[in-house]
Image (cartoon, rainbow, N blue to C red):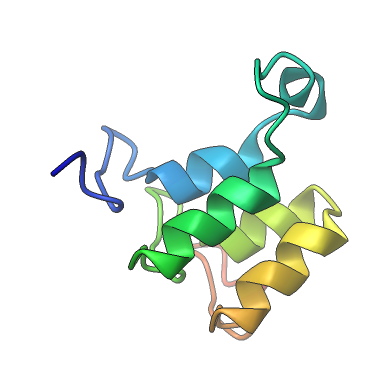
Length: 93
């Protein structure tokens, strides 16, 4: 049945976090040129939790905003990301 869409690593990062935070230079290295937003949409459409938090309390939306990735931020918000969630530094996205 495949891997769980919300599998956590040792920093509480999910595949969603990892795709959102992926550096732009790594996007060019993806063999099939699939955009991270396409993969993120697929994860969200298959039940990934949009408001999951890492060890710093950051959500994927925190990461997208920090990267100034408007396309990703919009996608996350359209799927229910909480724009008012606060991380452990009391910062919202």
